[in-house]
Image (tube, rainbow, N blue to C red; front, top):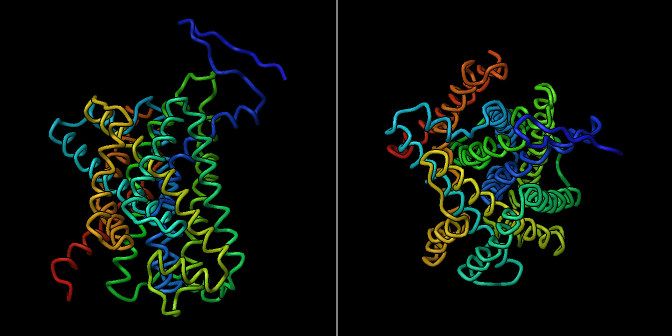
Length: 421
């Protein structure tokens, strides 16, 4: 099929013009990179612990969190496409310097917690598969992540392809695992009814939200789409760009949501009431005893693929944060080296890896409002977004989601101050 290349007045060539289907296909990809953040090892830890301790009780939290994530990722993608700038860049331009520095510091904490979860998860996977000590496994995952980052330097499309392939490995592993399990459909349906039964379930529900709605993915997605969807690239009309973003997000985030549902469902089916510890190691052993060694190995392989992909995406997000807020950047490989230090230190100290993963996700939940509030304020502003500005319903839904997340964090603070309250 022939293509036509247009040359803009400044001498640069636009993207090739294809048929409608192929043209839409060339725009897909950024959401698949962002979606990796939603199936990182922190999701494994919270999903396994949630299913093991409470059965299907928190299944509705996974569904709700994924729906909120879809909305927020759409706003982030639209922001980058409409303005040609990332969320951190717009914050730097519009907010006072002290506010910008505060937003940058908390965003860096978010990135550190993300790196911690990803590297620890990969280390646990290598321990399950090969019997490597956690510290050695963590170092090996750190080295392997450099290989994935090397693909990023070769081009965004290749990086997206590798990340999507790793996402497919995780999805395939859990779809197979759930297909082998005897899932009680009645209990699963009951888990879709919103309810909690204790402060412990609230803590874990907040951890699931923190593991699902990822602040660094919001920063990263706005940067990815400013490169892919920016107005004028390929002379595509706004309606086509919006459609491409919606399809990209619906497919990628839909896959991530199904994976998170599968993690909790598998844990609730095979671990709840079994007496197995609600940890990644306990899940591996119980899956092996209940469904066979092949299922347990697939669980560990999925955990390893998740850790590798998430490590690379987290480092990339860290670069977007620093460059956007401070107009500073350090080489990806230097950032990768700095990012692994906290995780390796925790592994060296012998901390429980599953508990460290869950607590890291709770910490991430506290960083969500600092990304959501600027995102909502900016995307509802006509002077910034032009014809891409939010509809009132979109803004209202985003505000409601943010208020719920902020309320969860407030309750957690109250429980921390007075655990018996």
